Length: 79
Image (tube, rainbow, N blue to C red):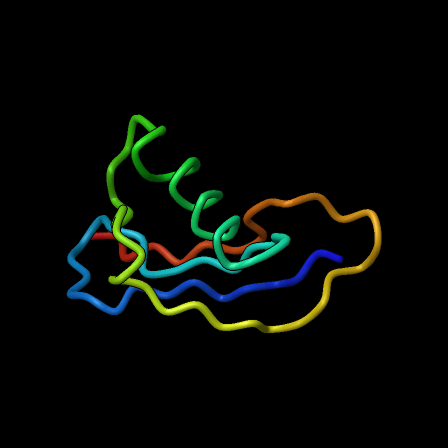
């Protein structure tokens, strides 16, 4: 069953960096992997912390059947 997670940075956030995401994933590890893939080491952008110790993960709810693992909301501090 897929779950909905809020992934928030806990370190200092500067302009032109992501502050957090809401994503659909199987577990917390997949939530981090999705964020890393979209905006971390596997992306041409590097605005996301790659160390899980700099983020807080909160289980928000359960996704409806058939929803794929993905980011459904992003928070970006534009400068």
